[in-house]
Image 1 (tube, rainbow, N blue to C red):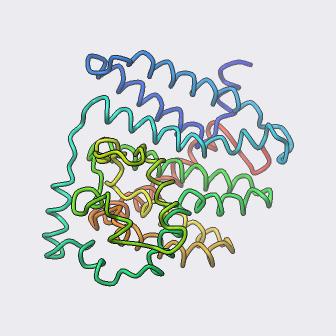
Image 2 (tube, rainbow, N blue to C red; image 1 turned 135 degrees about the vertical axis):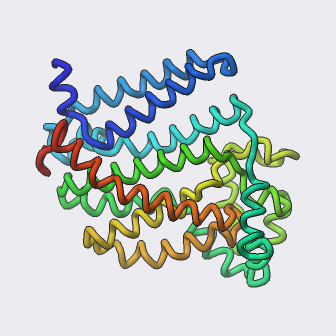
Length: 312
C-alpha cells in the first residue's frame, strides 16, 4: 500500500495521536541531555505511531468485527498510555510544582481556600456519592461514544472520540507547562483524607484505585513525590464539559444522564480535594478552546485525507 493510500486511511483522531507522539519525540530529543533513556522514549513513540498506521488500514471491515472494533476504539487506551508517559516526562525532567501559584490565585479570588469552605458541608453520604461520580470520569465519554457507535453512525462517533482525544492531549500540555499535585497534598494531610473526609462503603476502595492510577503506592510516607502532576488544568472539568456539550448539540439521549452526573462530577473535583478552583476555570477555558477548534480541524482532516462519509 503506497503512502498516499495510507494517509487516506487516517482520520482526525489518528492524526491527533500521531502529531502528539511526534511532539513527545521532539521533546525527548530536545531534552536528551537530561533524559538518559531518551532513545527508548523515541523508539516507544515510533512504535505507537507504527501501530496507528497499521490499524488504520482496517477501514473496510464490518462495523461489528473485532478488527474494526480495534480500529475504532484503540484511541481510548492510548489516552491512558499517554497520561502515564506525561508522568514520566515530568519526573525525568524534574519539573517544579506550581501549586503555590494556584493556591495564591484561589486566595485572591475567594479570600480563603475553597476546599476549607467545602469541608464545612462535608457528610459521609455526600462524600460517597461524589467519590462514585468522580470515579466514573473515564467512562463518561465512552457512554456518549458508544451511543453513536451502536447506531452505526461512524462519522459522528469519530467526531466525538477525536474531539475527546484532542481535548485530553491539550490538557496534557497543560500538565507539562504547569505541573501541580492539588490541594489534597498541599492544603490537607493526604494520609488523613479517609479520616477527615470519610465516605460509607465505596469511598476508600475507589480512592485507592484512583491513587494507584496516579502512581501513588499505598502506605508510602511521601506520596506527594509519586503523585501524577495533573491538577492544572482540571481535565475532569474540561472533558466533562466537552462531553456534556456534545451530548446536547448532537442530540444524544445520553444527555439526560451525562448532564446531571457531569455537574456533580465537576463539583466533586474541589469537594474531594483533587483540584483548586483555578484548575476548574482553566479546564473551562480549555474546553472552550477544544470545542471551538475541533470542528474545523475535523472537517479539514476528514475531507482532505480520510473519511468522506459515515460508511468508511
